[in-house]
Length: 269
Ligand SMILES: Nc1ncnc2c1ncn2[C@@H]1O[C@H](COP(=O)(O)OP(=O)(O)OP(=O)(O)O)[C@@H](O)[C@H]1O
Image (cartoon, rainbow, N blue to C red; front, side, top):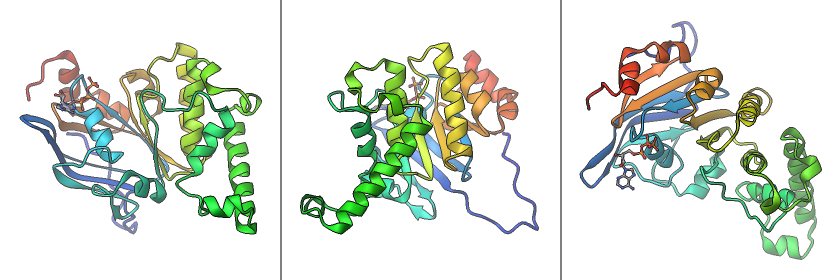
């Protein structure tokens, strides 16, 4: 199995942003994940790949706190998160998108993006309603953050448009903007290329690279679009039958015999 190179012995050890340690998940008689371990560094892009049924979505849902692993631990920014509710994980700086967009079609683009600030805002309803100074300052902070992310995602001109009227590819961009507006330290993307055309996939690649380089966030993407994963990721983790079979650079993982065999259908559990 190919491993990501470890840092030189003279370099002080810096904990990875995300540490997945021996995570297993069982559904009745099905072992969907078997002791999966890997790490993702801050400001890096990690792709999770594997054939159908490999356990990618199950892993994603464990990271996003939709599932509680039957064994193992997930540590984000030094904090064990496997047993935390989703909103407390978002507050730590771990944001996610959904395979099928979960936007509000009857709200405009700006309001959909503003919703993404709820995990990091400090003012309650009363502060806003009474127009207290703290509420006003907070409102301005939200407006500035929203404007910045709309600009970065080339959505400023569409800010007032109802989301339900927009084409699918643009709605996906709105969803990314909503996940980014709170400036997360890591963004989990569930099949972001699903349903996009060739040109939109290229735009998505640029956006993911900018999320790392300009927004200084790590990205973990579960994706069937192998070309996108291999051209975008710093690190690729491959799963098959719920177990990790490779972990390394895109070049290392695409040359890995277990990975080639899994995609050709020759691997056994
Ligand atoms: N809620 C569930 N209940 C029972 N079995 C499940 C459940 N979710 C996933 N599984 C099983 O766990 C295994 C892993 O499925 P998972 O959806 O995580 O794989 P995947 O790699 O995302 O597949 P795909 O690429 O087809 O989406 C499969 O055998 C699947 O049938």
